[in-house]
Length: 372
Image 1 (cartoon, rainbow, N blue to C red):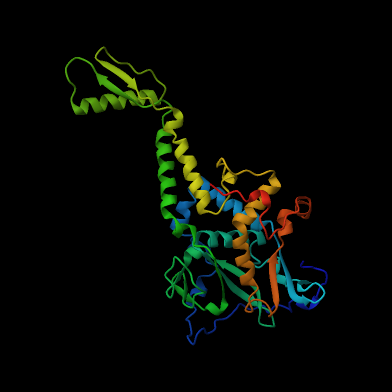
Image 2 (image 1 turned 180 degrees about the horizontal axis):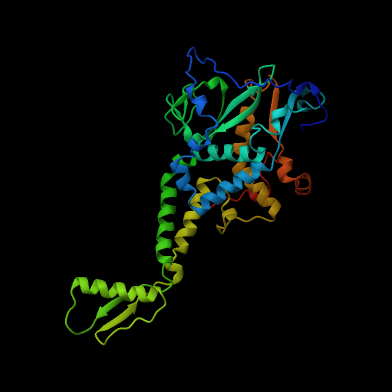
């Protein structure tokens, strides 16, 4: 079992040079680095139309917030691995963190940066940090996030990203990838993997909004006698009758007209069953246990709030956190052999893990039932 039992102070970073990262070369090409001038011009930043459209669905918004609440609750810690001859396994030796670990971007809180980085991974399948300064040993000292919705890459069209891109453009200007940290998600971005699911949810939502405009069930005005009315006269009559109903006023009919309400009930008019099924589809798309979105699956349950937190971690957020930690552990970010990881105990709690006998790397026995 990995142990954090010693601290190596040599991991503390040297004094930071008060100088922004400069452009370099990659693969023999020299980028113009014109996109750097747009960094920090927040008025031009955009998250992407497809992502913003998806966030109009309440289930998508809730799923995104659940993921972000997990990663924002966990801090990063640094370690190195060493072979333990007595135990016969690799041992994790705790290291004093570099200065940027608690606040990679000095302009915004740690929680904000991590939440929006996960947001990019969740919706686009990749995320970007730009290195704004370096320490005297050449390693990064601070970063700033570049929204994935403002990034284009000419060497990869997507929606599957195979590796970090070598031709990156931010707001139309090229950026040297040497000063970019590119996080590549192991799963496809949500806006690409099932766009029809999001569009269906939006259509159902629009239908519910139309039906909710009137609390009275729809009906039919039927002429039973008298001189036949023209199409325009019937339209005017229906419009006036509907306006009176909508404003809770009294609508009057003569002996030649009758009103026949439809059999639509409020639950049918608000498409509750359709909305619940749509939310279940969204849970599948966003890698969220359905019950966390308020959807009952009939065959899946949890025993406590602690178990719900474990399910959220194991079945949803862990894969994104591992991607971020692995990328930040690369030789371009930290000295060789040095790694970072999220402190899961910050989120799950030491007491929960001990009382429940839960291994954070394996699902608990009572979470093996298949999600509907």
